[in-house]
Length: 482
Ligand SMILES: *Cc1c(COP(=O)(O)O)cnc(C)c1O
Image (cartoon, rainbow, N blue to C red; front, side, top):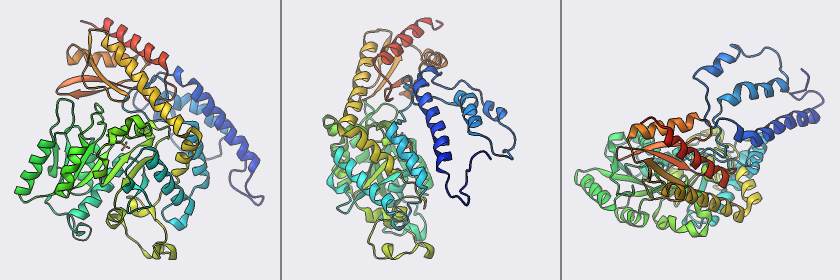
């Protein structure tokens, strides 16, 4: 071996580490500065990478140079470039220098933050960052750790809604589900536009998908309070027990906002756990002018948003807040003898293992800490505002071309649009755009109509990219076969 990878009798080889780390950081710097040059959506065919890799793991140590060569040669072609300024598909997955560095330091510590005692800083920085973010976003005081509530980092909004549902399930069954298994009478409510992670949570929690009610939406794709009220009444009349309502602020298809004040008041009156999912849109609340999007959040028992989507913090980093942390802990806590310790026994600190599904957990709060300090609240606000302005610019381009229509209200950083033409031609337009490699968009279907989604959310995206994307879309639409 050319370098001492494992400590020997001389201990950790600091110089060897510096050389190796520098080589990879240089490569990352070069990648991020070239990211615009690559086809945004990967053009490889299934199996291409596997075919290029050796069948067996290497017997002997390989040099760093071989790894970097293969990053270029083998991996880059198979990357869809989420950090490209021309990535407009799905919702964004941001990264940034401070975030990257936070993750690197986290990896260096290599800690398991399952208990306070297994790395006090991991737990306390996390509690503190969640409180910071609550302040920054103007969240209700009931989600602060100083009261009965608090926040925790989950890997994803999917885990967050599952944890919320497990807490709601215990509450609705007077704490008996964990002991006796799930009753068949618990019902969960979302809308037809709710993210599929709610379906999955209902499956995993053992409630059964038959017990998930998909409430109808209005013309702007927001959940109808009247329809929810009627469904709850019908379920109660049938002897069923409403367990949880999932309200979405910024749906995945169109960024529609369910009417939280009305829905929240209904949940409060009915005594039903209210989970609010603002996976993408929640980040916008760092700007005071968008706080009103969260009006009614006082009603929520749990709230989730993903800094890993639109707040410059790389995946995974999803914030889950609860108003009553004991409801969550009561649903998820289990203590084998080998995890017992005096701090936990005395209840003197939080143990985040009791706030999530797995036992082990990474030191994710570091990247948030770095992001919040390096950008500052003002930096994050101007970042969000910049994307909202670019999105408005794209919508203006569209509005001036009669061939196109905008099919849902434009909120924040998403435009849903289509050619005034058949679904087939819209699908052909999307495929032609994505096959060009120059931009990447995704689609949805609304009321049976095929719709293109254009979401602005990458740090490198600027006016030029918006104008070029529009020019490409307008030109491509003109070349489609009749
Ligand atoms: C993206 C999204 C999710 C899922 O997020 P993950 O963190 O990937 O699980 C859930 N809800 C909404 C509204 C989303 O947009």
